[in-house]
Amino acid sequence: MLALQPRQRVGHDILLARHGHHISSMRFDRANDRIVAVLDDGSVDTAPNLISPALKMPETFRSILRSDWKLILVASTAMLAIGALAMMLSFGMIGTMTDQQLRDLAITYTSY
Image (cartoon, rainbow, N blue to C red; front, side):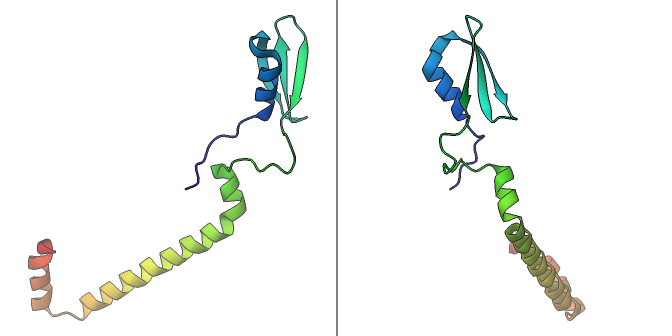
């Protein structure tokens, strides 16, 4: 089963490996896709957020919806059509029953 987890920033791990407890704060620079760390002595160090462009990141709910929205739409439409067909068939069967059959069905319904 696919476990949906928030994406881990690789740059955090790189900077922690380089500097350990000497990091005062870290932030994500979205424009450059880098992690920026301010160290205890006031200097700044950065690390890229990707190890390799070919690296496949874990999937998130948003990435699944973005890639599979057509499949989800087709499956939902099919299930809605099957449900509507089943409802029409059940109403059609009830419409052909006599009053005595409907009364018997209502009395014995709880036994099912």
